[in-house]
Image 1 (cartoon, rainbow, N blue to C red):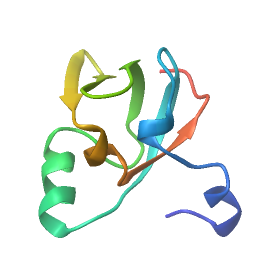
Image 2 (cartoon, one colour; image 1 turned 180 degrees about the vertical axis):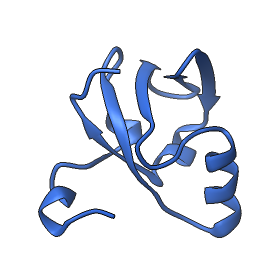
Image 3 (tube, rainbow, N blue to C red; image 1 turned 60 degrees about the horizontal axis):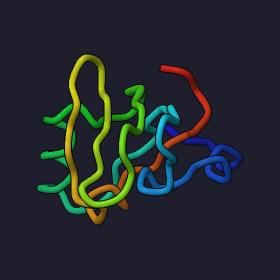
Length: 84
């Protein structure tokens, strides 16, 4: 889990710039939304790269590229600056 001092380093995934990498720190929200994002691979510790910010947003997760609406990413907090 996250320590209190780690929280200040986190940003919503929707604020990550194109080509930037990060590690998923937390997925927040309703149980159904969190479960759906987890099934897609967006879970704590997963490394991601922002391919295209905005709407739709495109992420690289492993060998996959996933498309999301920007509002879905507000509930995903990441620690930026970590290479994938």
